[in-house]
Image: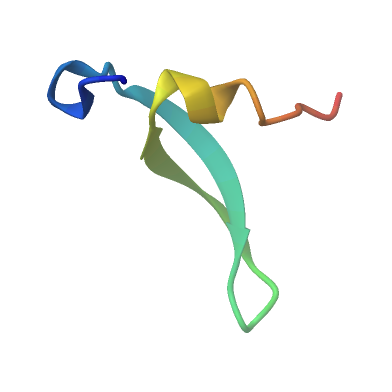
Length: 42
């Protein structure tokens, strides 16, 4: 089992579009295991 108290966190910037159609970047914190599931579009 993984001890979640010692899990590292990574900050990622993600684009967020509001109701008015404006896009901004927001920071989110994820665990390294979750980052493996994120794909990046170029």
